[in-house]
Image (tube, rainbow, N blue to C red; front, side, top):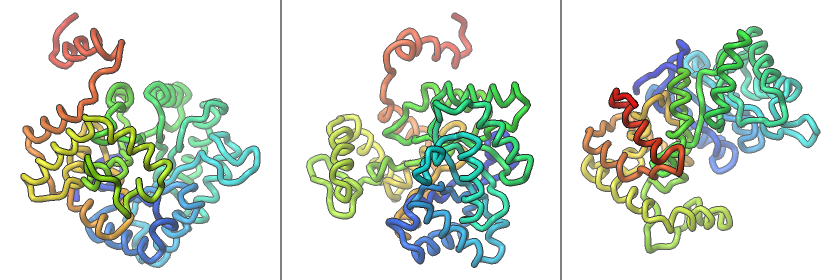
Length: 344
């Protein structure tokens, strides 16, 4: 397992992280413990959760695992999030000082720790003044309740505003951003990735397999089979199936991933994760396995090294193309000139 720094911080984390969205829901406690044990055995350190995962059960399971595994807390870099509703009260959600203070203390209790290593804002809040949010996080950092601040699901301008305001006010600045990012979802590369590169934020991509699409479980002329996310959640699943399954680009990407995987004798999931782990600014890729078999396969991506030719094949095939101005012409021309060092 390789280790990278969390953005500009001095905190090292494993190149693959364990996402725990399924803990307490699709994955019961015994299976969750088994995943955590295996992840730790192979050198994994970054464990990511959120207060709303499985109605708070994910944090509780991790807390019980930490309590039962001697030395685990010292090795683990623990990340959680706050923002979404945890109760039905008017202040039971958002990024206000009032809600985050309650949410952070509740997460600390459920996890059974005194400090959370990476506390992340789960999404932007258009109602709460950003300075209020950042001052709370700075206070929580100074008090020792959290070590580092992260963002999740922010747009490029929101990332830039958060960093600029933190710097201008002398507050603790974010060190990471957690976005959706994979071979089928590359829109983050237009604004979000450059903003993070410019300001030194490390990326923690979620959904590296695009809800299972990049594992190769879906076929062009076959209906989704039992056990897939599409089949289990018919309404939402079929909506996604219709969106992705009707795009020629989807099947072209899957064919390219399959070709590279066959060349290495590994799974399509491992190739997809290896491609993402090597992208600029990526600090750690968040795995979201439901079973031990899936986790074992995903973890093996740490040993996959793609050649420049294989990377280029995946890059070109998965390129979604430039949206209209300012990203298309002349935007693409300006971008290529900047990269090549030319003037314009």
